[in-house]
Image 1 (tube, rainbow, N blue to C red):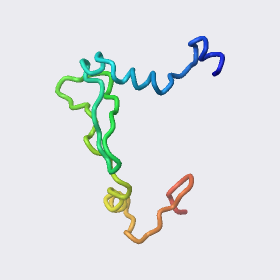
Image 2: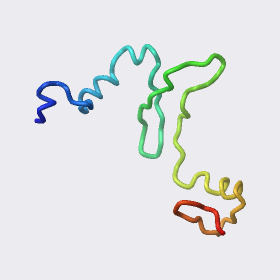
Image 3: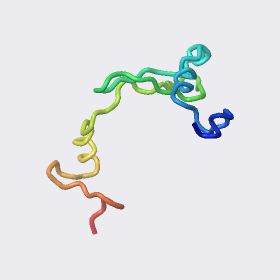
Image 4: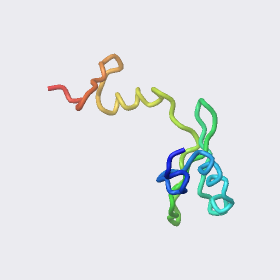
Length: 94
């Protein structure tokens, strides 16, 4: 065990501490967490730490899957569906 852990002064929280922190009734009372789903199941995420009247600041209920928006993005930037996507620092061909 690291010396900082024996003294209770480590910078990060261990997994058991994080699990207990997320189960804190105060987080539920303040509606600090939302459930999001993807192909792997559901998980909790933190909401924004502020509220804005008349604005929906909650996260989406589902996560995008790989490639879900590829066609729309290619169309938006003017790439044909069969054009290669460049990798690296820039996507601009010169």
